[in-house]
Amino acid sequence: MTVLAFDTATPATAVALCRSGEPPLEARDDPAPGRRPGHATRLLPLAVDLLRRAGIGWADLERIAVGTGPGTFTGLRVGIATARALARARGIPLTGVSTLHSLALGGLAAEAASQPFDAILAVLDARRREVFVAGWRPSALERGGEPFLSARALRPEALAEQVVELGLSPVLVGNGAVEFRSVLERSEALIPEGGSPLHQVSAIHHCRLVRALPGGDPADIHPEYLRLPDAEIARRSARP
Image (cartoon, rainbow, N blue to C red):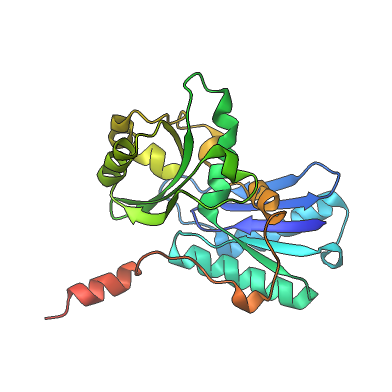
C-alpha cells in the first residue's frame, strides 16, 4: 500500500511517503524558536517533493493519513482540511491518526536506554503552562492498542503527581516533556536529551499505525482539540 501521511498538530510540518517493501521517505519543516509555523505554505510542497523523489504521482496513492491532534487549532485545521481535499480528489480512503499515539510509537526506540521503563507517555506542549498527554504500555503500541492513560490536558505538576501515583517508570517523549523537564523529572521519569529525534512527531509512525486502522470517508475525520481555543476562553472570561 502506498500511503502519504502528514501531521500539523505541532509547530513542525511532518510528511512521509510509505510504500510496501520500500524504505519510507520523510520531509519536514521545523520552524526556529519564535518563528510562526509554515503549515499552510510548506505542507503541499513537501508532499510534492516526496512524490518526486519516489518517482510516482498523486494517482499512485492508495491512502492518506493525517494527524488529528491534539495540538494547535490553526495547525490542525490546515492539516485536516488538506487531507480531506486530497482524499476526495483522488477518491481514496482517509485515516485519522492520533498525534500522541504516533509520537509514543516513536518512543519505542528508547528501549536502548540504560534505565528500564514500563510505559511510554507522549507529552506535547499545550501552551498556557499545560501539556497534552496520553500513555501506552510498549506492548500495546505496535498493534494500535488503547492507551492506559487516555488523552487529556494537564498541568505538568499534575502529570508528575499522576506518574508517581500510578507507580510507573515511564519514558516521556515530545516537546512538552522537554519544555517542562524540571517538573516532570521529579517523578523519576526518563526524558531523552532535548535534541533527540524521539521528541519529534514523525509522519513515518503515522504510516506504521495505518496498518491497524481503517480508512474511511474524509468527512468522518475530525480534529481532537481536548480544550477550547484561547480566543473562546478569553471571551468567556470577559463575561460579566
